[in-house]
Image (tube, rainbow, N blue to C red; front, side, top):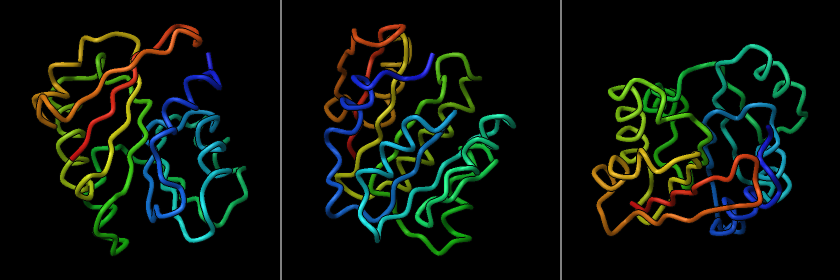
Amino acid sequence: MPSSRFLIKKMLQDIDFNTVQLIVEYGAGNGIITKQILNKMNVNTTLICFEINDAFYNQLLQINDHRLIVLKQSAADISSILKNRNLKTVDYFISSLPLAIMPLALSKNILNCSKNALKNNGLFIQYQYSTNFFKNFKQIFGKNNVNLNFEILNLPPAFIYKCTK
């Protein structure tokens, strides 16, 4: 099921779209969150989307917006992608990756690389359908830097993690 408008609203509510320079979206899927981000972004903001599923990647390529960069690469490649594009830090990460069912080493690598790429006071925003990964977020971002929220008006209901660097 695609993310509900209620889930998307909660995920994006803490983003300052007036000042943001770079947003990275992991697991962009069919672009439902991507389109909402683009609707809120200013003209000088860049959105980089990672999607490895062929069908979803092709759907994302149909979005005609010069601010959007769609990559068919793993989120684990974030460090090299930023370096190759001469980008220093990311203001916000929006993630739909199924971290809890990915190999633990891979998911922790993605989170560590993302934290390293995140600007100070930037946010890593992730939704999951369980709290199984909560301790990993706290371990990587620090126990006082992770907030957990819940959106019941989503099928299935989702937990939203907001991690601050």
